[in-house]
Length: 107
Image 1 (cartoon, helix red, strand yellow):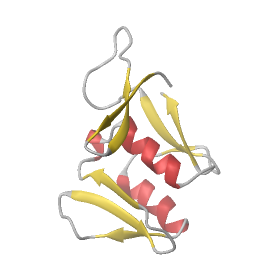
Image 2 (cartoon, one colour):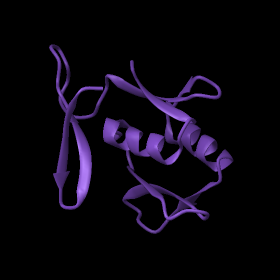
Image 3 (cartoon, one colour):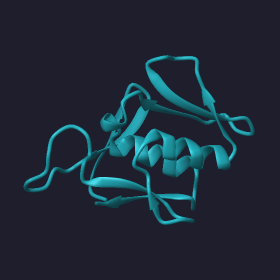
Image 4 (cartoon, one colour):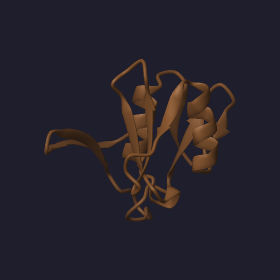
């Protein structure tokens, strides 16, 4: 994982260094992996199944976002409605809130 951590508007995020031949926009070079099954998350249906099994519930408050909330915590996972717009910062948010369950890897 390389890049620069940027603090803006009260949020810290990793801005990755684009390597040669890398694409702009969504991080097509990264994948989210469910460690217990070693399964790559390929859709929101797959992710929802995995998060539901971990105690997360869908949160339908904002129609423009795909969100999950865990009752036992204050955590909220907010993702773009379109899975193709999922970026590495969203993946790392899932990893941080589900330690030892998910991992971001190079594709």
